Length: 311
Ligand SMILES: NC(=O)c1ccc[n+]([C@@H]2O[C@H](COP(=O)([O-])OP(=O)(O)OC[C@H]3O[C@@H](n4cnc5c(N)ncnc54)[C@H](OP(=O)(O)O)[C@@H]3O)[C@@H](O)[C@H]2O)c1
Image (cartoon, rainbow, N blue to C red; front, side, top):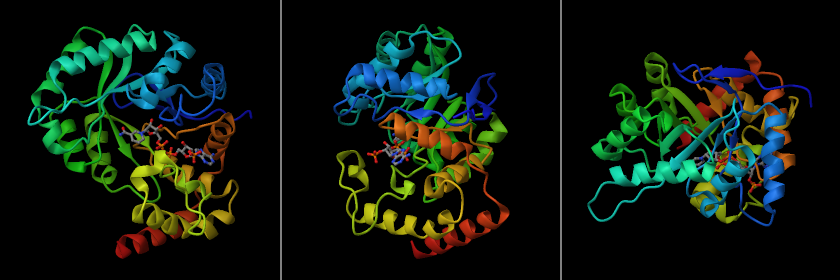
């Protein structure tokens, strides 16, 4: 494939991102050996991807390890990782010590001198973001040059907006896809105004928006556990509403889903997960598909308002 992805700037930093990155939550899971995963990571770079989003807890730590082995200190890449929550009883979700030790551990595992984007990996609720310890720890790590940008993965508009307006973060990670823009929508203008970068996760709503499931054949993989039960079936049903529209365009459902995310230029990049080179290549192809037409945008808006009214 010759089409390299477009690039965008990460908030007000000088960092240039490929508009499609690689979400690394599946990297290191399953039966692939290390070399196969490393090949997948290298293939992503060959295809023009320069953003990788991992976390200390992905694949029990193997995801960070593989990213570290694949890239180490390689220049031109943007490696984002996350520190796990340590909440005990009424204590803080992220203690100062846990954030600092977490960064030091990730630096070693990633074999890097500096983490480009270091994010909290909690709920990102307002209550969590109001805790002072993670803020102090992130500021110290940035001052020491151990991290380049402070980040938080959020699932709440309230939390995200509070973090931006109080200068607690340089980057937020939000969910953004055809079925879910709920917390991201109010964050978008505030992030733009304050120069905060946005990493958009789950462009396929955990694979559902690739169109590969149906109500007759839903998926029960463990890694979609949070969407199992009613939520999984509701999302599959909702995704069905886009199938006819997707059938009329090059690239089908994956391309429609990806182009919907890429059309939001206030996002800095999207980070689809991939479990194989085939998925990775298909995702790059979806990003290289024709942008949404005005007709498609209108139909999408109609379907989305119908789905919202149903909720
Ligand atoms: N709390 C947080 O901070 C948080 C939470 C969620 C995600 N994230 C980040 O966001 C990234 C993306 O999220 P996600 O992976 O959950 O959701 P996603 O990007 O919407 O979906 C990715 C999953 O869909 C399937 N898939 C991908 N490409 C495909 C293709 N071309 N054809 C068919 N199936 C395909 C794969 O799973 P199967 O093969 O199993 O179907 C893949 O793991 C993660 O890797 C992570 O970096 C962060």
